Length: 391
Image 1: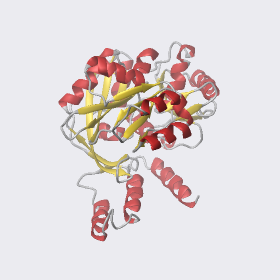
Image 2: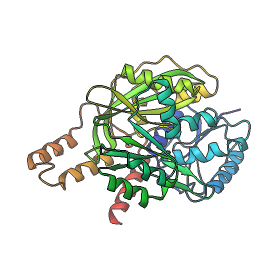
Image 3: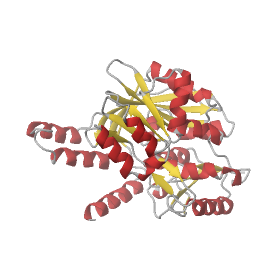
């Protein structure tokens, strides 16, 4: 029987990268999203588009819609891209038809890493460095813990970025507090601090990620990239990045954690590296990442290899090449933020340099979304971008 793949979250750039990767191998790929059309759904490699209820406002109905489409289209491989769709599917995975492959380990293994409170306790047991951490179950516990903290800033970190509830998904955010008063106000003002969270010391340094694929507890490959430009400029989403050698120490930490829980599938292990070179664990995300296209262009075809590993097939030998990829509209947003910034942030001369850098992103830089052989997703992105500017 011909394999049939359903990629969810079609408006994500990672979904587009996955569809292009799998479709280029001749596989039948459908794309799902809560609205239509979607960016990945307009790719030449997408055979069919489906819609489903918004998982944020109706998680159970989203899953029931998904089940219906799986049966109608005879889907054999299901690939959620975001944490929202992933957590809903994992919550109800026992209801999936037996023939459907879901490229994740047991739900308990996912919870061990995706739940940051569990993750940091595991890391401490495994000798992986973490910031100084206080574990809290409620905001009230957090307020009491603040009385013992003498060094600021601190980081208030919810146990998950997306918390699945019976009738909705709660989105959370990390809060950096520069005083006890700021921390107490954040605990009071944000309802998601009624769920478990941690209070951690703030680590000066730079963020580095290790991207991995595991096959039932065994590592298949690792990948790393270097962020060259981010939106906003002070730190955020990567808009220009290049492949980079994998740091041996960070790889060792990531491998130790993923082996411990017998991981299967992809994972993004994030660290913050301090000036003394110590890599402190920040989080583990059980999903594809925004710059997935860079890895594929560099020769590490994560979506295709994930499909092979999850369906009992042989993964090719790993080798990578240096590549650079730019998210054009994200880079344009970044340039706008630079140009409108105050002179004490960017001088007139620095702004001119940034303009030149925008128009000269580097030799052989490829664009993440706009590809000559598959342009419709880019035109869709441009229309959405212009519509957002008008609103």
